[in-house]
Length: 365
Image (cartoon, rainbow, N blue to C red):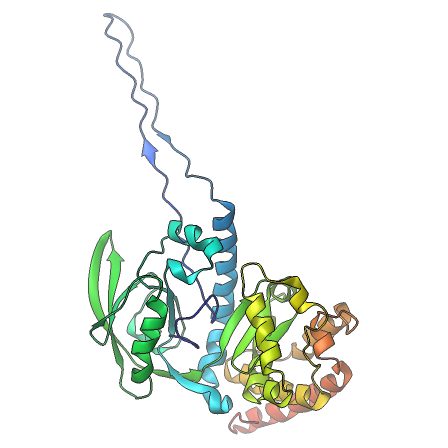
């Protein structure tokens, strides 16, 4: 599983939205028994419209679509940068899974109507991971880990994490027993998943419209507002890489902001966050220019190693600072105010990185 294994919404989490099939019903018209009357043509079958989705279903589908996008963008950053994540690299299986109890109570009924039941179901597979290589698919139902049956119900995630924990410390592939639906016939099968060494940061979606991101040392949270601000997947990759770099460099610890930032992230992951908790900067100290520049430098290497372009990196941050300056108290620049200094250091870092690329040297800061 990815990052924190089987956790709450995010970790980069993705739900599988199953659209109910339309029900077809034929309109049967009794034949006229009167002799010598012209034959009447029966009306064509009329398809009954699928029930209109509930507001909770609409909200859950929108949420999971955004989570899915974050997951795909973050995948190469996580799997390509284990050497740059220092003490934060861990063995991962490379998938996430949840059941109907994984959602806040507000979405429990919607989750069940969209196909989630008592058992854990694979909701996302990290591209390039062992899970992807072994053929694990979205929608697979988890039955057992290393031949030990998985618990169902409200405590299923925690129990699965407990089973996986001791197995993840070694190097041996892990056997999973899954139930896969093929042509309406459930097929139980075993898959052997090799471990993937990757950055063990969870990538979360924040349920708020302020344009900001947060990093508490183990998590990266991108708000809904920031996702809407970013024009491309590459720009979202810039944001994820920058906060991964802050985490890798231990900046939350150096700022003594682990608990404060963590509480902000916890709040924004709720279905209905407390808006007062993120008023102003939420109690988070702005990053000094040297820490911010160091994170930019590391982020550039992470992006290139993951296959992302960096030519538009400075322009994105300049646009963000222009549209949401430091005077916007709950925006990104309020926590990262040294824009001019950052632009200078980004230029220097880019030149050094590209020189290493041209010379065929290892892409390490």
